Image 1 (cartoon, each protein chain N blue to C red):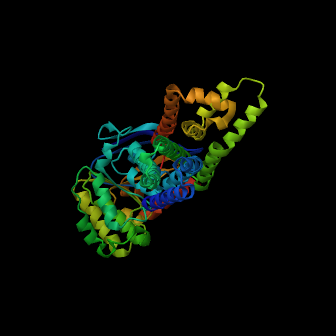
Image 2 (cartoon, rainbow over the protein chains, first blue to last red; image 1 turned 180 degrees about the vertical axis):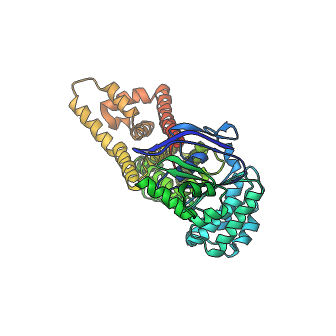
Image 3 (cartoon, chains in turn yellow, cyan; image 1 turned 135 degrees about the horizontal axis):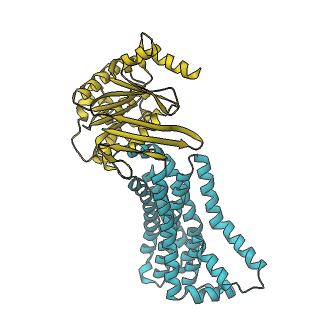
Amino acid sequence: MIEIDNLHKKFGKNEVLKGIDLTIDNGGILAVLGPNGSGKTTLIKSILGMVVPNSGTIKLNGTSIKKNWEYRNDIDYLPQIANFPGNLTVKELIKMIKDLRSSKTADDERLIELFKLQPFLDKKLNNLSGGTKQKVNLVLTFMFDSPLVILDEPTTGLDPISHIRLKQLITAEKENGKTILITSHIMSFVEEIADEIVFLLEGKIYFRGSIPALKTKTEQPDFEHAIASMLSSSYA
Amino acid sequence: MRSRWSYVYFLFYLLLGVVLLFLNNDLSKAVITLMNVIIILVPLIGTIFGVMYYYNSKEFTELLLAQPVKRSSIFLGQYFGVALSLSMSLIIGLGLPFVFYGIFNSGAVWDFSLLLVTGAFLTLIFTALAFVIALANENKIKGFGYAILLWLFMAVIYDGVFLMSLVYFEEYPLDKFSLVATMLNPVDLSRVLILLKLDISALLGYTGAVFQKFFGTSVGFILSSLMLTLWVIVPTYFIQRMAKRKDF
């Protein structure tokens, strides 16, 4: 369970998060949505401890994440932009990340098979295409069996087949009882997999609830229009 | 990236050692020439490699940050990785030719080891300062600029300002001032330490006598070693502190 209490973050003068209160229960898929620059990635990075908040607390299963790093053993994180050290091969990178985890059980072979990455294993990461990098990124994220999975724009650059496999993967993880946090701009993808959504707007939580609830609230028949109507009402 | 460049660096020192010995044909003279090279070059290389390594491995750092690894161990690991491999290149690269030339059978062995130790210290100091600068500047170009400026200041400008102030305040007793001013710059401190050890302090004139009185004693030696250590510890502390607060 994640408890976020009154989280504030400023980058210079730019106030990105203006008091986020959010409790995420175990199990299920929660999608964090919002326009560009609404603070989705900052929120996620705060949970990971990559961004140090100005004020507010974040607790994971009752313990504060401040000055703590072991808790990241329980999180799998897929970064938005796959930035890897270019001079390593895919194999070396996977091995290295495995070495960093306390639990040595990783199920990389199944994932390599699933995303058909075998021909790329001995290639340097510099020479991979964007989509292949994203697949490597997915393997690194899903190969551990952590109770919390955080995915920042997981669909970027994926071909349709990999897209379908990713959806299957996410659904399977959900059935294992994991908590999954996703950000995405692909509304159809979100509508298909998310149990609940959180809508961030200008650093605050604007809406939280299920997709049907959102449709009723905005009086829109489909999800994409519901989101768009929320945006336009806020811009107006 | 790191390993390839440290080989180049190692080969450079190897070559330098061999050429100097060949040209001078005398150990003590070679040590003096080396000193001049080390005092200027080691800080420069430490600074550039430190900054370059930090910016180059930024992606890697971000990858590590999401993993269960302590922040300070990521950054201190990177720092010591760079600084120690540079020091090793220096010590082994210069050491080998001198050992083969027969440094152990000559009187210059202590001078030479002091030279290597100060070289290693300078590497540690300037790599740490470079990391601090790189951590403080998100912008690569700015970071590089500041780092080079720092080197220029420590290696060249500081001396100029120091000399000018000596000339300007020539009527006052300046022993204490010049001692302190030397202590505050690791480059100058190393230079004075080596010069005095080489027993050519007569070249330094009156100030040399004062310095000899101070640095020549064991108190002076210990104090200057402490100062050099402090120059390593303080920036390292800053690396850790800044790493803890930085957003990625």
